[in-house]
Length: 588
Image 1: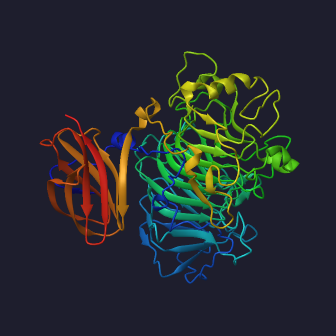
Image 2: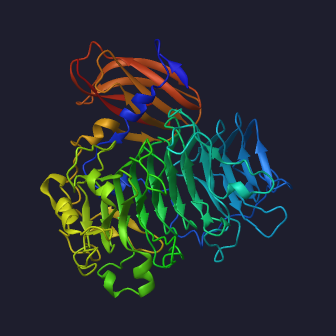
Image 3: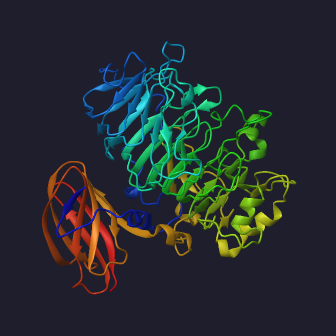
């Protein structure tokens, strides 16, 4: 990161966490304003039929051994289409740079010798830099022809870091222990929550999720002990053969994630993951679910959220205590339909929007969840106690808040029973009445079945097969019900991003509030000269910082503000064809 203007320190880890959650005037992932729809330009909703050019580079990402090691810096060429069959292993000290517009087409073959896993593994100390843009994303997809692609065509993206998890400092991602040519790959863990595994901007991951072994599938994007020095903003995982996203410990924060028609869970958290995720979309499809849903043991149903502390439900620290804010989850139930009318297979495979179990402490706030049998299952006394359903002196790390959410279609989802109602489900040791009452308690501010679950009543067109629109309908009441006042956000803080245009992106500003100076982190897709100024709420320039030279990548600008009066201001960063504006507050 380049240092600009006066003496500056590197971006502080505490500040990075403290500035993460953005205040907006709606719950769910999107506002009704089409001009602010962050899904436009870089997403693809029909990747099965998408036309991709044939691979032109067959060697850069492949090796006859089945593993391609990257130990230095390798930069791909967006004019080429890359074929991926090997495991690309980005070693400690190695870096793979992928420019905007690059397409990588993967194809696994477990019958080959050696087996071809077609995956990318970022090892501890390695870095992957994905430099997609909102109009020119990077794409990892299947090498098969249009119409024949499906989940599990290739492996997936696995990122291993040095951040803390609750299992140990040298844990291995499931499935990698039996790789014949290198059984030591994909190990994660450490003590550095500030660890940096790279940059992931505007990336599509399609048709990953290869089963390395039976019931050991790779996720679309696996984040194992990834630290919050890593930047993840703008990822769409489509048709994954397992979870779309899974976090195993770590503290990375993520923005603008899309989980589209994945097999198992959309957002799965384990092993003490303590980061935050804001702005996410999850869409279920009744044709894609975990085939083990009815297994006598090890059954897995498909939820938007699944959270565990670990498989044994231990109290190992740190507890899984992630915060998900501004998520829109669309379940499998057809618009205007009821879960009870679906096939027995679909009813068994899809049940609730969130399953919080095994001593985890997940928080879901300011979100929209519609079209499920139940809204949430709290599985076990430990999570019921941590939530506040059952009184106790225990206070969890994140507060385990299920708060200020817009929930619909629970009234007609399922008949009341011993362990589930239309709203809540608990394990067989408990009854749902207490959880229902807790979810409906005014202090938790959840809006439940306020609008009929039908076409055009909640979201504009969420079930459209090739061009879904997840923006809220104005009459739904989704806009204007946001709440950022609760204590959990004190842990992550609040920032207010205003806009970014072109090759500039402002990602953070600190301290909040500012007293003598404000530090602003700026990411530039290429080096450029920019003008920096401070503007008041009337649009008047109150301070000219001057011209700065930005390098490609991360930059830090410090603006002195000691002479400014208390109030709200905007830091403007602009070049000839790019601009970014960031709001900050002065309070001395």
